[in-house]
Amino acid sequence: MKNLVTEIYQTLKSNNLKNYNTLKYFVILFTLLSILISCEQSDDKKINQWSDFVEFRKGNIPLIIVAPHGGDLKPKWIENRDCQGSVITKDLYTLDIAFQIENELNNMGYQPFIVYAKIHRIKIDLNRSLQTSHCEDDTSNELWQLFHDQIFTFRQEIINNYNRGLLIDIHGHGHPIQRIELGYLITSQKLRELSSDETFIQHNETSINSLIENHPENKKLGDLLFGDNALGSLLSKNGFPTVPSSTDRAPKSGEPFFSGGTNTKNYGSKYQNGVDAIQLELNRNGLRQDSEDRKRFSKVFAKILIDYMKFHYSDIFPSN
Image (cartoon, rainbow, N blue to C red; front, side, top):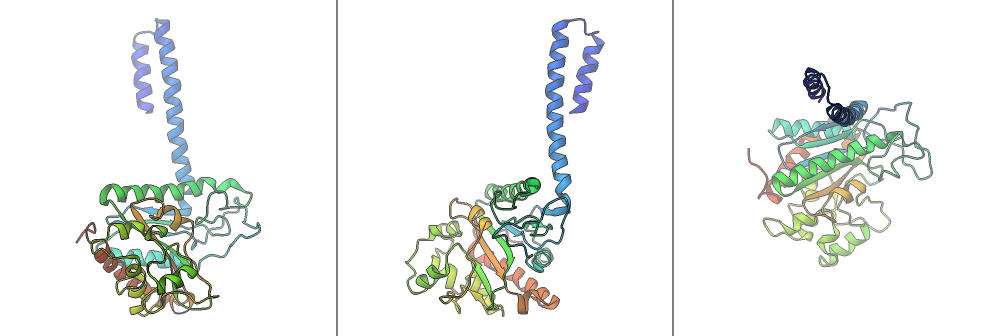
C-alpha cells in the first residue's frame, strides 16, 4: 500500500504538480490510502498484541477443537474478574489435553482446526458472551472478539469446503461423580425423559441438529445419544465413563450436569445449519489429574474422534 502511494506521488511530481485539480486529487487519494494503511496496521497490531494469549491453526478435516479455560497467563494490565457469579478457576490441564489430542491426530495424518486460549479464566471467560466475559474492565474485549472471530472463520471455512462438520469444546468439571459429561444443549431432566421416550424432544433442540438431518445412516437423536456409536458410548467402552451413553443414559435427579455453554450454543447447529457442537466436560480423577491418565485419554479420544467422524460424517470426511 505504501509503495502505491509513493508511485502515485512520483508520477505526479514528474508532472511538477502544476495542475491544481491534480494536486487536490492527489491529496484526497493520499488521505484515503493513509486511512487504509492505518486500518491494516491497526488490525496487525491487534493480532500481535494478543498473539501470546491465543493459538490458532487451520485444519485439513472438518473438525474444530476449542479450549477456552485451560490457560495460565495473567497479564497485570487486565483486571481480575471479581463480580458476583464469576467463575475464575481454570479447567485444570484441559489445554494440555487439547494439545495432546491434536498431536495424536497429527500422528494419524489429521490436523483439526484449533482455537486455544492461553489466558487464565480469572481475566476473561471465553465461553460467555462479550458482555459477561469480564466484569467492569473492557480491556480484553479485543481478545474476546479475536477468539470468537476465529471460531466463526474456521466454522465458515468448514461449511464452504465440506458443507458440515463438528466442533468439540473442551472443559473440565469438578462434580463428585467421576465421569465425562457431554453437552448437547439438553438438560439433565430432558435427558431423563428422553431416555424413556426418544420422541420426547425434537432434534432441532440440540447442538447436533445438522448431523441428524444429514446423517448418512439416517440415525435419530436417540442413536446419537445412547446408541453403540454415540460419542458417549464409544468413550465408555474405552474405559472412560460418560453421560449420556448406552450405559449411563442420563444424570439422576439432583446430580450436577453441564449441558453446554455459549460456544456450544453459538457455533453448534441448534440455531444454524452446518457445524455441530458438543461440549466435552472432563472429570478430574482418572483422567485430568495424572499425566499418564491425560496421555492415555488423549490417545484414546483422538482415535474415537476419527472413528466417530468416519461413521457419522462418512459422506464428507476425507480418507487418508
